[in-house]
Length: 336
Image 1 (cartoon, one colour):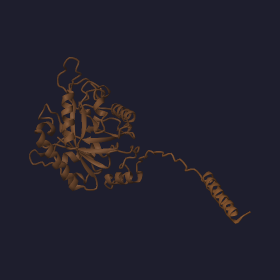
Image 2: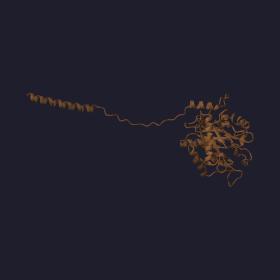
Image 3: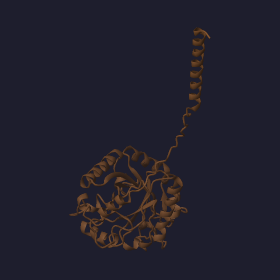
């Protein structure tokens, strides 16, 4: 074989070998793995250690074992004890029922923001938030046609309060005075509002007339069963609509206004505030607190302040700094 032919043959073999190696390399090269992206929902849990520390702080050094109350932990997203609620109470049809209906809207909202700022300055360890506490069902001294001595406010008025609250990023509480009706019957009419995350509930035993009396003729009463009816209703609402926990405010200034308090059962979905109602001097209000709130713990406490009645004569309304000395510290403050 000539040198030229040998060289040509050798070059052909080299090209063929290179081509085979490249083909083999491609065949042996592993294919890129296909990775499916799986989105994992973030699970929000309650920091129970932090929650308990805050509850102990609210108990204000109580050594009796009454406070903090040993109740169920709330679901994540609970307002209490992380926020102190400062609420203005009233009804838009009456200047006599509270500051919410007494002052023009802009003046009222500005005054509420001022009170929130005062509480924030008095206790910076807890976030302070505003609320409008509107009486959605009012007790009546006369019984209209099948009215059960109560009057339901028109929804357009609730809508007005909702709009005002939105302007200052406030919570809304809808308050119910049942008269001769029942808690179950009255709160059911407010279902669509209570489905909203920022709307909560108040119930007033003072105007629950179990003996058929005319509201206002005597102080009414509610049992743990009545209050648990509200808790169970709200619990179902929260569960079915995937809502953050609701706050239930129950007013009280006599022992008989709430019977069998120890049978009231807060749930993970509903936080219960017993709000000390009633007006008068500081001495009188402190005595009421020690008689009706401190010795009968349910879960959280509130305190009601009256711009007019608490300031009559030589009396002066409690300041935030003074109320923070109470045991336990109130986490819900209502101005009327």
